[in-house]
Image 1 (cartoon, rainbow, N blue to C red):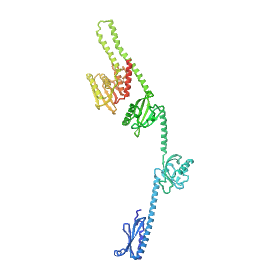
Image 2: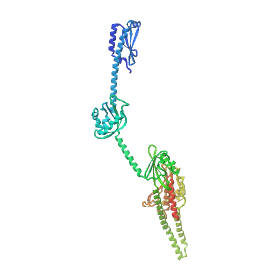
Image 3: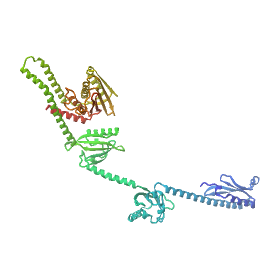
Image 4: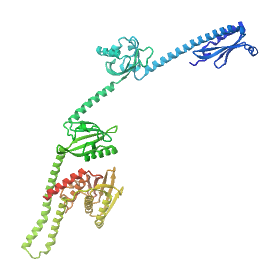
Length: 595
């Protein structure tokens, strides 16, 4: 309470009574407020009052000092004076109490109105029941959600029957109320709207903790119908995914970003290196062989750095035989990783059979090509030998032609034997720009002699890739020789080396030669198919194989009369498995050829 005396009394009434007392008694007095300021006074004369005794009658309201009456009188009159001014003080106090109560009542009324306004306009459902069980509050959100207006619900004894028409369900709710009392949270109730739609409302009753005058019960509700539908949909989708997981032969692991396995899903049937439960809470290096675990750790590191899916292929010895698996590592939210493992043993066997078929087909093509290419010069030599037997004179002029045909046979056999070269593919980190620069130096003399200018362009002179330098030199020399031989009138060969996404290199060789017809481009790379009159096609076939063994690609674009562009893509890092597979294919080809 913080009140001032002037705000609590009718000054004119008190002043009139004090004036009448002064007229009857001629006793000097004044009324002072809490700051000792005079409100009114009668008969105050300094010469007079300074000679008389003074008494003060303080005025307190609820222990707050409001002011006082100051009275100057003879000793014989002090008792009567004090009684009178105490009576005036009591009148002031009684009046102040009435004013204060009126103010409090008004303030309380305003607070109740404000509370009612707040409850009416809250963005959640708010309802309240009185001590008879009738609704006394049904806010606007309740009206919006249910379609029932406050006029239809408040004071209506059948309101619960409207909202919960099912008799058994309504009794169940009422019994729950009786059991749990005035305190419950997050009760889900199925409420029937005016249009017949059933909605799920989550109610919380906290009327015991936060009582409101006039409310026996009051509760806050949230319409969660849409959330329940989403929840049911998620449950259904989860069930469907569970069925799919059970039907698929894949094994799925959920891991932290440090590789710790926190969950798994196993299809049926699934091969396990150890029981799936043994993976829980552990890292791969604690379970799998060190070489395989290292592959997984490297895949997780790469996935965290690049944020892209990573595929790992690895072998495991199960029940005495080697099986092959493919693991796809996928980044998830909240620093989680999904790893999907699939048994690819049968696929590997099929690929091996296909590679053997390709090898046999290639050998068949090579054999047919060799037979055709070697037969022609042998026919010439045979014919001349037969001619020598008939006419032994004047034979010198035929020796050069015979030697030329024999050299032709040697060249064909040399190219053929290069396919069966027994050197293994050993990769090292090399500067691709420097490799090409060395090749250009080797080929430049021949280019100058045919009036051809070779230009080398690069964004960086330090592009390091993992490769077999000698094999790439063989490819680049073959491509540049083809370009030089196609430029009968001289011209320019442009070589562009460009680093892409820090993962690979693009090399483009652009010449100004006679070009290649579109229908012939499709056959380039086949054994013994060549666009040159005396070509065998083996050089380009080897180039394709070498680039393929480096996990790269070759593409050729050409326009007759304009020139040809050969584009080579090479990754910077080689997969050991891919190179191993290539070695296996080459060894297989060599063994078949040698046999």
